[in-house]
Image 1 (cartoon, rainbow, N blue to C red):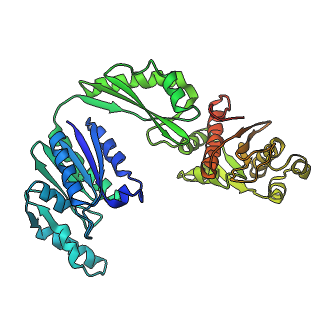
Image 2 (cartoon, rainbow, N blue to C red):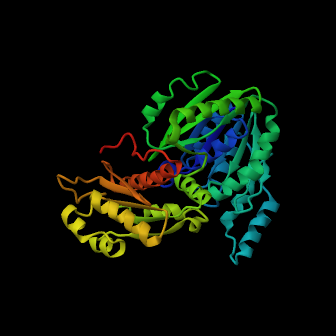
Image 3 (cartoon, helix red, strand yellow):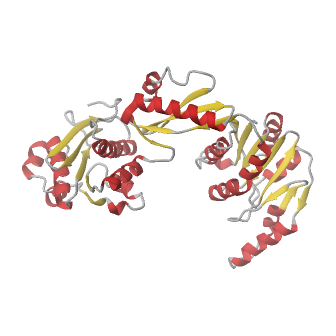
Length: 422
């Protein structure tokens, strides 16, 4: 069964919003052993939309359409799909009454243009929208079944899970199984990963995809087999081989973020942490506390931008600041030790650097960072130069800090990404 995804809207084509709907829908389909063969984005332009609908009907059994179901003049999905296949639009009184009730419940008067949201192509099955005024609908044309959903992500997500997935699953029947996983890695470039794994997933029944999501690289092993059990067994075998080959470069699977993995490890070991941040400006603390329950292991942090803050709040010796400067090995070591002692935690981590775009010198260029991790009786520190703009520089620095915590808990070597410069 081939699937196709179409997202509708000028805002998508102009780059005003990030089109996350495609990835969500494709992932959901893969969970039903259905691979997406085509993905298309189309402007709010009837001829272009009609052409996209006809193309989908000529090559796919499932077409998921997102967007263009609102009440405004640029919401044209229903009209364009009806025109593409010569269908009449029918007013559904039950849907119209529900829309009126929603407006009344919020103390608002429904405007006339909302009536368009209750019109559907003849023969369509209406898909209720529990979160908004725009119902979706499903309609078959030849070999293709179209599922039209709102573009608003939370509405689309709920309707996909509750309305669309059960219908597709029921229609799919038996067939080859497809299983895939997402392995998250940090510390090795995409091309080097490919070279390291060049002998893995080389047959037609298994494949290995690569995707960069700075500062990480994701691996997507995929297995096809006659049954779900066979596909899962093959996938287990592939993933085990990859993990043995890459070791601690793999930090998580699926939706696990590095900060979530670190938090879980700290909680399981009953250990605590505090952070001292200069160039990262509180980003490490923010990422750690994004996790529910982080109060069990995160004691607090200090954003010590000025020399005075480093000295007064963290106990960095004035002599070290005077002799070596704020961006230096002695200072970052003192920051890590100071925050660990002041908060009484197991691990203290510190960053200081020059994120740019200015502030560098010949001996301390823009992009230089120093990072340190302090434990009882030991401090480890290193420095790197990241030639990149400010936002990515800070994100990468925070990622190394979190990875150092993870590696410390695993008892493996603390290293920076293999593609960075010392």
